Structures are given as C-alpha cells and as structure tokens.
Length: 76
Image (tube, rainbow, N blue to C red; front, side):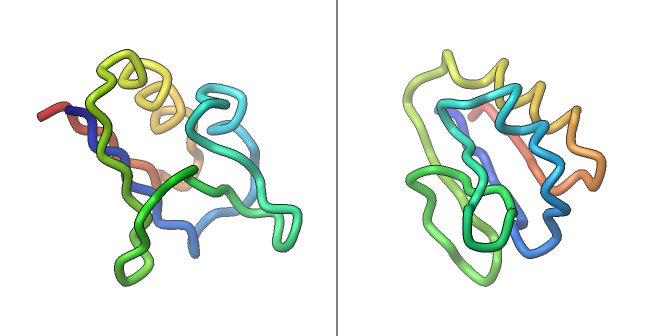
C-alpha cells in the first residue's frame, strides 16, 4: 500500500507535482494550489491510501521535486 500526503495550505503553486504525477495531482483553478486527487483532508493534511504500488515512483518524484517539501510518500 502507498500512502501519499500533501500539506496543501503550504503549496506555492509551482506545478511540479502535476508534471511528475498527473494521475494523482491537479492544480486548483480557484486558488492555484495543488490538489491531491481523491484525498481525505484531516487538519490540513490531504492523504490518499492506494493499493496500486505503481503510483509510488511518480509520487516519490513529485515529492523530491517539490521546492517546499510538502509531499510525503510511504510504502507500507
């Protein structure tokens, strides 16, 4: 299982996450910040849990590319 977390409020809207993992991330037209698709929001942490291990590499690249380091990816 892959767990991806985004601290959306700290997003600066650089779009790197969407470029690296377009199946998991999109940019909001409302405020220009990243959106983790199908995520649950708990106290500002937007999280998805996926049984699809194929998303790990792209999400990890997105986390590494993020200049404000607000994306975390774990394989459990």
